[in-house]
Amino acid sequence: MAAHSAAPAAGDRRRWLVLAVIAAAQLMVVLDLTVMNLALPSAQRALKFTATDRQWVVTAYALSFGGLLLFCGRLADLIGRRVTFLTGLVGFAAASAVGGASVDFSMLVTARACQGVFGALLAPSALSLLATTFKDPKERARAFGVYGAVAAAGGGLGLLLGGALTSYLSWRWCMYVNLVFAAIAITGGALLVGRQGRTPGGRLDVPGVAAVSGGMFCLVYGFSHAASHGWRTPSTWSLLAVGVVLLIVFAGWQTRAAQPLLPPRVVLDRNRAGAYLTVLISGAGTFGVFLFLVYYMQVTLGYSAVASGLAMLPMVALSGTMANVGNVKLMPWLGPRPMVIAGMSLNAAGMVWLTRIGAHSGYASALLGPLMVTGAGMGLIFGMIAATGTFGVAPQDAGVASASINTGQQLGGSIGTALLNTIAAGATTGYLADHPHGRPTPGLVRLAAIHGYTTVFWWCAVIFAVGAVICGALLRPGPLGRPGDGPAQEPSRQAMAARS
Image (cartoon, rainbow, N blue to C red):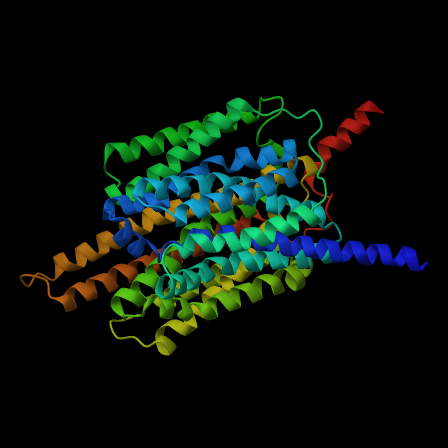
């Protein structure tokens, strides 16, 4: 009896150690989405590249990451998640080391593109490992609570870490810091993650890979191009149009392919589709919180990079806490629908509250409250996305279902970057045009910038409010149930019935 009881305990400990490894890997990927933002000015001065070139440090990562996510997610299903997880970690660490040692602009951009490639391999592998490791509903809730907390808080932590590393060490450490996370995750992954099953007889859907990767590449590049060159340029519209056409072709092909890259059964479930749409809308709106709030604190209020990162800490702490509480306590009782509606509504309220900022606003009076409200909303949203987006999928679809979550977040962030940058620039220019008094004074320029920020926050409030209505209507009411009860299992059951 003693030996029998000891085995599950050891297995439990091993599962939670695997969770720690996955969390470290996911934190590295999430941090990298924002940690370089505060380092870009320093990198630009050190490597002597132009402000126009600076956008490519961000875009190179976004293009390779967003364009390859679904392909890499299916690859994890076909060749084994342990292999793709460890390969992604090693490759991401190597690309980070090269990026930190960059001697010129081309070396840095190439390293960022390689980071995106291996990040696309790593992110869906990590989440699908989590989905296939934890089967017990209570353990699954805790595991996804930790994962959701990392996803919700990682972006804010990236701003804090990026500011501290840039201020006290060098911008290069914003790349080198990945080696620390990667070393922990590689060691733990090699020792703790067991051999993962492959999809028997599975083949790669090459036409599907070409269509969706090309479509995502064109969309992400098109939105990035719109942010720097405007929406009216022919190149912007051409890229976006080609991207939409390719994704339509991809969707049509998936209904006919013998072994589709993204099986329709994964996305036709209402709850999973609701989770993917939620992460897309939330990604578009959340961009306004991070980027424009940092602009406001540093440019208008004169905060240092470290001070602006510390100012974000209440939001980071509350988002992580609410993600964990939401997944462990609320999801089993209420299901994802109330969490999304409440989270989106809180985010909308936080954005409306932020529209009251001024040229001399105090932190406690104008920023702390909306940051905490927004943090709670983000925590509730991210607390349900990972669990709902992978719930009920067959094991052979876990990788591509996980990749769909990351794809939605990446595409949402690209849309938010382009749309909100354009709105802010237009509002700022319009404010200056409406107050013509000769050459604009520094005070007028500051007020114009604040008007641009508040206009963005109003639009973010609209995005979140619309998301609460649409995603709330799409998600089913009530708890999710038990893994294996979802529609993804129906084809296999029908096949068994047919054979019998």
